[in-house]
Image 1 (tube, one colour):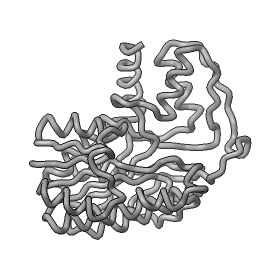
Image 2 (cartoon, one colour; image 1 turned 60 degrees about the horizontal axis):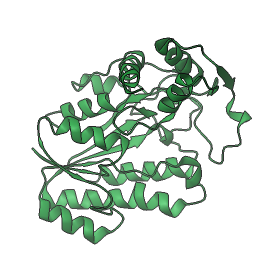
Image 3 (spheres, helix red, strand yellow; image 1 turned 90 degrees about the horizontal axis):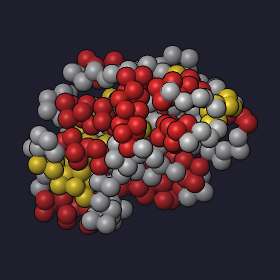
Image 4 (cartoon, one colour; image 1 turned 180 degrees about the horizontal axis):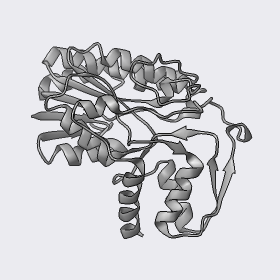
Length: 281
């Protein structure tokens, strides 16, 4: 399969290029190669490349800054996705797009499923939900909601920063009242590869199995590193965050598993990532 991966320099997309490239012909496009906010350029470039699948790894994920830059968030997370959906329709390609747990309000007490009604509480979440709708307008589309991505060759997520701080003996401030289902980029890329080769298109939650508070995630990271945990539990209300965050962000991946792409637990994924992290330091 001939696959175009956009935003190819990003944390998830760079791993997608590596994993998908092991089985398919992959054309990696960075922002320098293709600015997705330029609609005509998107249509012209993808028409010329004529891919069988378009995998969008591009995103504006500056959650707090989006409150002050809504037009930028919408340009990348919403209208660029509309352009990709139209290009996919024009060249008969499958579209894969990644969304977020931030489309939910976070007021639940059990993991969200794909059937739950979104209710974003931030500009970022709103821009991503609109992007989902545009992506699903494509004739054949997968929308995969990921959460708290970590790992990969360009690791720079919350979990990656926690590991760096623990390894250096620095204090880690972690939410004791915010729950997440993290997504290891390698596992997301493998699930993507499985889905595009035969699963029914649609909306899926693509997170590692299980969920925990950020404090619990940080303590597990410290245990795996064998470091003395200097973890300070904090509450969301203690920090002056511009954008409101969903408090309970756990996502159910049962639909993904039923489609033939089961995800390992977040503890298993974190242990594998810590092994990679150890070798790099």
